[in-house]
Image 1: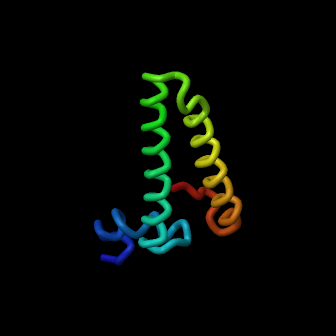
Image 2: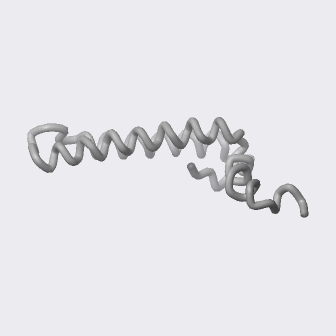
Image 3: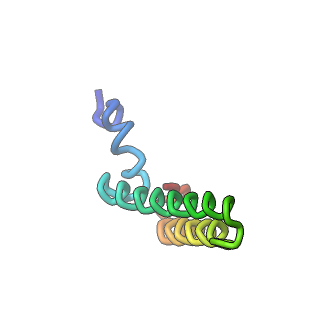
Length: 85
């Protein structure tokens, strides 16, 4: 069985490799996105209770994450046209 068909390869390495990243690079990027979304979500919860706080936090976070993803797609466009986190 070829290495690219093993369960471990499919679950851990194929996606990062398809994006031109190592497992560690991809993990670091994905964790950064996760913390950004968690932080934005926490601010949304506070905003739901106290609407005067974090009035633009959710849309600001979404724009920032979208810009980061667009930048990564543009940087990887030639070799990795379907770049996704």
